[in-house]
Image (tube, rainbow, N blue to C red; front, side, top):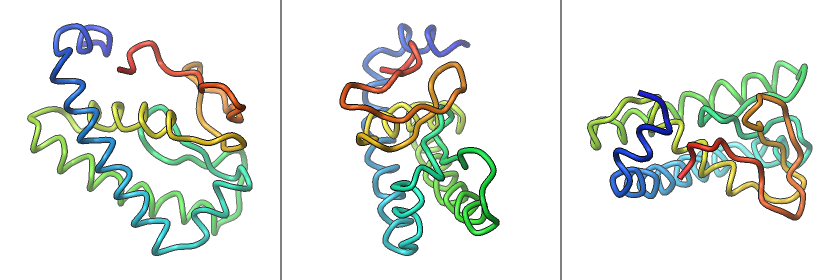
Length: 135
């Protein structure tokens, strides 16, 4: 089922899921940030950005330390998405996608995010480009 079909078929449910995933991802990101100060530094410098699939990504070729940070963050988020998916009876991929929508919406000017076409963008003062299937 495509994300657009999911959005129309599960309108209210997707909003509930998005809220739950958003809170969970925020908690997971805060945990990762609190445990590793390099996380915020990497975001601030543009070395990492929010991906449309719900995970943090390295922007371009990065150092082994940044790549390690991305892998560690992936594992933390995957745990959150897995728990959310199990609780809501949805796939982990769907939970991650909704989390990605929220994570990209939460970026602040100067931070990197992945546009729907897969390119990396730097958030300006306006809203970021979101996948049309995002709630």
